[in-house]
Amino acid sequence: MSSDTIQARVLVTGIVQGVFFRVETKKAALGNNVKGWVQNLDDGSVEAVFEGTKEDVDKVVEWCHQGPDAAFVGNVETKEQSPLSNFDDFEIK
Picture 1 (tube, rainbow, N blue to C red):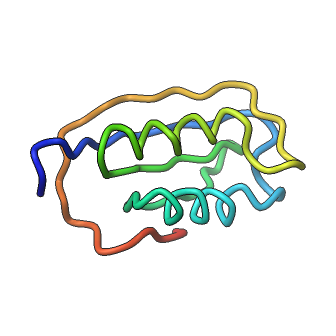
Picture 2 (picture 1 turned 90 degrees about the vertical axis):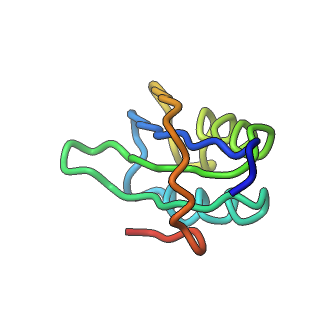
Picture 3 (picture 1 turned 135 degrees about the vertical axis):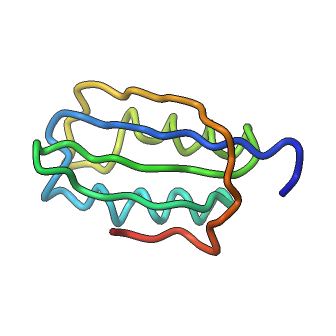
């Protein structure tokens, strides 16, 4: 794990399920060398954990504010946390 590695937990609310948000999040993450995961929550929101360089993670978090074309993002909450470096890839849960 590099010393410039960060981890961010993101909660996205709005119309973010049934609009390919998780699939497109994975594409954005992999395109920016970010590892972690994304999942739907029972309340209709999407949760994700991104790990990579600050610059790369920031790009994916910024993408979450827009999401895929069919999404309507109401809010994005981001919390930076200690990186665990236990991710091999980016997965959809």
